[in-house]
Length: 190
Image (cartoon, rainbow, N blue to C red; front, side, top):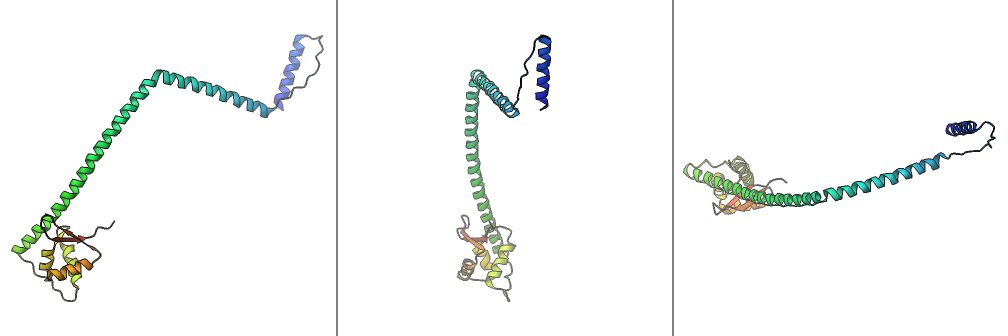
């Protein structure tokens, strides 16, 4: 409303400046604020769109070669990363296999040492056979323990020891590459 009043005063002063003796017919000017704002926003969108189009044209015209070059460099880098990841996967698998072989060799060495100095057999007493086997697995210096060590430490025969171990849900059974016999460990929690 204040704008309309200011515009009317401005028009009246302009008419007075043009000629004092000229009669000016009063005119009513209405300004719609909503339509003016919408026109202003439309104009700004057109100007911004034109600016972006010019900017995009200049970017493609002058820097188009650089975009293609950057894309080829990124593709080469991705290929190098994929090759490196494949090498690392193979190395990790080899390290895992080496770790298992070392554990099995350690268990075999521990069994061989016990052949020289046999440990006293665990007193069975009131404990069950599987509790004795779990105790041996817990006190082993290595992750894997051989069937020979279990038999020597518990005093159980091979068939009884294997039967107890197969029934235990927390013990994993495998076949040692070095010992060429069955080996055991606690299952890893996932």
